Amino acid sequence: MKAATFLPSMLLVLLPLLCGTLPAQAQGEISSFAFVQDDASMRVDGTLVHLYGIYVPPTGQSCYTFIRPPQCGSRAALALDFHISGDFVHCLPRATNADGSVVASCTARGDDLSEWMLRQGWALALPEAPFAYHAQEEMARAQGIGIWGIPVEAPPRPHHHR
Image 1 (cartoon, rainbow, N blue to C red):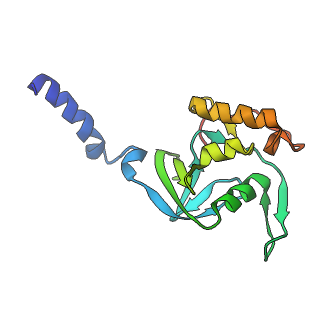
Image 2 (tube, rainbow, N blue to C red):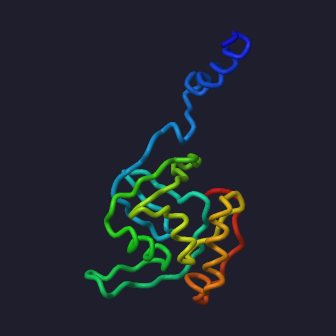
Image 3 (tube, helix red, strand yellow):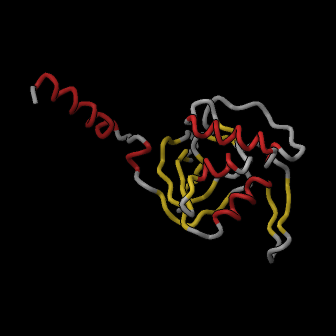
């Protein structure tokens, strides 16, 4: 490799290390049991994780009375928690928010959790989300499931990560 191309390449690699910051993807996978919060974010291995590419609008409170003790929370959060059902969640961080929470692509039970939330109608795809996420949202909307099937006033889509 020529010095003219080697030095700029090395600077791109070393600069984040010298400045003491790393992109979120360099932090590695976060894996553990997930504790789903009322806004459908998750606490995974002590880290607050927001699912990548989606926005979960408030869906009102509901309770699952068929489990003991009954579990209450937003409908979207309950659906996500029920889907995970105590399995390990594996998250790859994509960005770190100012509050220290991360935006991550997460999987559980073999599903991309963002896609699962969209497919079930509990989330909206953010503008920068992959095309597949928008397609999942449109299919849920056409089927009238999740937020598309209950009387919920969906707020406008945010243009940024939470």
